[in-house]
Amino acid sequence: QVQLVESGGGLVPAGGSLRLSCAASGRTFSSYAMGWFRQAPGKEREFVAAMSWNGDPIYYSMSVKGRFTISRDNAKNTVYLQMNSLKPEDTAVYSCAANRDGFATMRSSRYDYWGQGTQVTISS
Picture 1: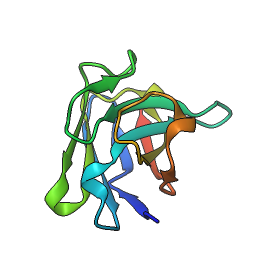
Picture 2: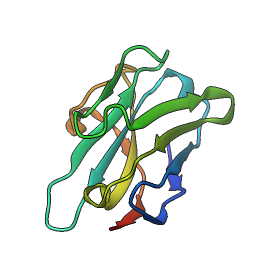
Picture 3: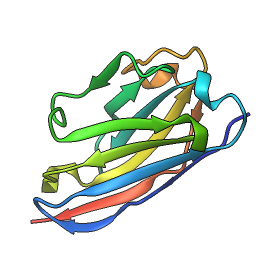
Picture 4: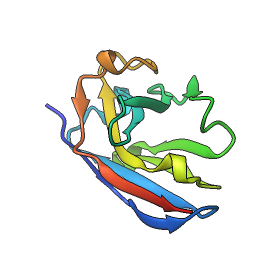
């Protein structure tokens, strides 16, 4: 069993930056693919970014590509999402997820473990 805990959300003005963190329990973190998803009020959950267990490949949604960067530190059992040039439409609850088979995917159904999420609000 893996537990995921996100942090780093908050309220920032448009154009600002945030770095989200997702800390994982367990000794097998380095073998998992990790993903970030988000859900805005009244909308379905949306893929944001994903990284395979060894860092390759990495996928981004078109809406965040060039602005967001996913990374991981296996020594710290943590995955990060650096978010730059934030826009009001980035406002959502951001959740991280872990996939035991180790391969990055944009499909939320492929992820086995989920965190509770952290709120990101971008003011215009």
